[in-house]
Image: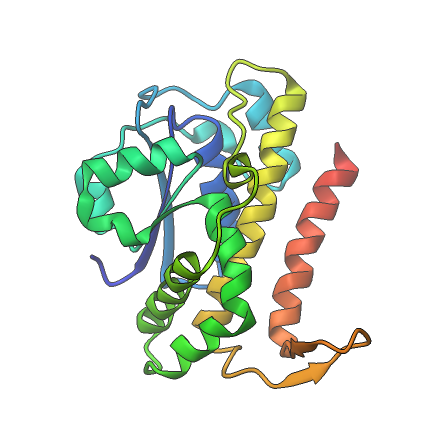
Amino acid sequence: MSSNFHILMVCTGNICRSPLAQQLLSQRVANFPEITVSSAGTHALEDHPTPAYGRDIARKMGVEQPELHRGRSLTSEMLAEADLILTMSREQRRIVAQLNPQVVKRVFTLREFARLAEKALEGGLAIEIAGCDEQPLERLRAAIQAVTYARGESLPPDNIAHDEVTDPYRRSYEAYHRSAQQILSAVDATAILLGCALVGLITIPSQSVDTAGKNTPQWQPVALMLILSAMAQGLLYATSK
C-alpha cells in the first residue's frame, strides 16, 4: 500500500456508477490530501466515456468535467494497493474477493459500508480511534476496522437490494437519477466517517439523553459542518433536477 489512504470504487463497466462515486467522494475529501479515490470496472468498457445522462447528473451534483472520465479494467494489483474497496453490487464484491482473496476484509458494497458506518459512528469508531496514535493513516485504518467489526455484529438488511446501487446503464434518465441519489447518500455517510476519523472529531463520545429518553452521542462542531455540507450537496442537487 502507498503512503496515502486509497479508496477504490468498483462497478461493472466503470462508466456509470463507480465514476460518479469516485467523483463525489473526491469532492468531499478534497481537503484531506491523505485520501485518494479512483475507480475501475470488473468488465470495463475500456476508454468509453460516461453516458450523456450520467454526465448531466454529475454536473448537477457539482462534478467538474465528468466528460473526461474513461472506463478502465480492474486488476488484482489495484486491489492490493487499495485500503478500502467499495463496490456497487454484491456480485462485484464477490468478484473482487475472488480476484484477490487478501482484500476480503476491506471490501464492501458502497451502500453496505454507508449503513455500517452509521453504526460505527455510534461508538465502535470512537473505541478504535482512541486506541491508535495520531498518524492520519492509522486513524483511517482504525475507522475501517470499526466498520468491519460492525459488519460482523450486524444483520443484513431485510431487502438485500438495499445494499446495492441500481445499475442505470442503457436505461432512462430517471434510472440514472435514482442510481445517483443512492450513490450520493452513501458517499455522504462514507465521507462523514472518514472526516471524523481523520481529524479526530470523535473520541469516546459523551452521551446525552434526548427527548425520547435515549442516550445519543454528542457531535462536535466540525463534524456537524461535515454533515451539513453533505446535506447541502444533496439538497442542491434535488432542487436543480
